[in-house]
Amino acid sequence: MITIKSPHQIEKMKRAGGIVFETLELLRELVKPGVSTEWLNREADAFIRSKGATPSFLNYNGYPKSICVSVNEQVVHGIPGSRIILDGDIVSVDVGAYFEGFHADAARTFLAGNVAEEVKRLVEVTRECFFEGIKFAKAGYRISDIGKAVQQHAESNGYSVVRELVGHGIGTEMHEEPEVPNFYDRHRGSGAKIAAGMVLAIEPMINLGGKEVTLLPDGWTVATRDKKPSAHYENTIAVTDGEPLLLTWEERGPGG
Image (cartoon, rainbow, N blue to C red):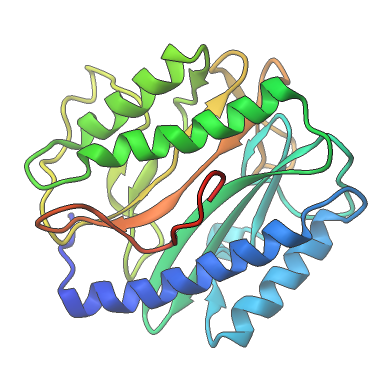
C-alpha cells in the first residue's frame, strides 16, 4: 500500500534528508585515492550518529555496514572493507539515515583523482537522468513516466539502464511501495498514479556498457557483467501540488 505523508511528516523526513545530504557532502571531501572504503564507512557512521540519527542500512536485512560503497563496475550495495580507492576510480556512495521515526536515502558517484573523460561523462549523465525523471514526479503523472524519462535520457547518450534494481517509496520503512523503475517495461504497466504526499527515492543506475549485472559472491554487491563502470545518483523527493520537493539535496551546481 502506498502511504501518503502529511506536511508534518514530510518536514520530519526533510530533517532526516538533511542529515543524509550533510553526510554525502562529508564523503565528497573524503573520497580520494589512498583511503579505504571501510574508513569512509566509519566516518559516515560517526557523523550520522553525531546528528542524533542512526544509519538506515546497518543490519538492514543483514547488511553489515552503515553505508554502501561501490567502486567502478560495482553498481550498488558494495560492502566497505579493506579496498583502497585508486587514482581514476569512481566511487558510488549510498547513504540512509533514520531520524525521529523516518528514513531518508540518497546516493552520489564521486570522482577519485584523474578519472577518464568518458567515465566523467557517465557520472554527469547519470545525474542528469535523475533530474529528467523528476520532471514527472508530479501529481497526475504515472510512476512509469519517471522511468521513461530516465531511460530515454540515458540511452540517447549511449548508456544502458540497470533493470534488476529500482527506486522505491520511503517513509517509516526504508523500502515502501511503489517501486520506481528507471525504465519502461510494458509488462509492468504504467504504474501507480502519482499524488501529492507520496515520498519516493528515485535512483538512476546507469552503465557505460551493457545493462546486464551480476551478484558477487559476498551476496550483496551488484556489478556490471562486462565490468565496465556504472554510476548511481539518488535523492528522496516529496510530491507536492507543484514542483517536487527534494529532501536530500541543496543547490550546489554540477555534481551536486
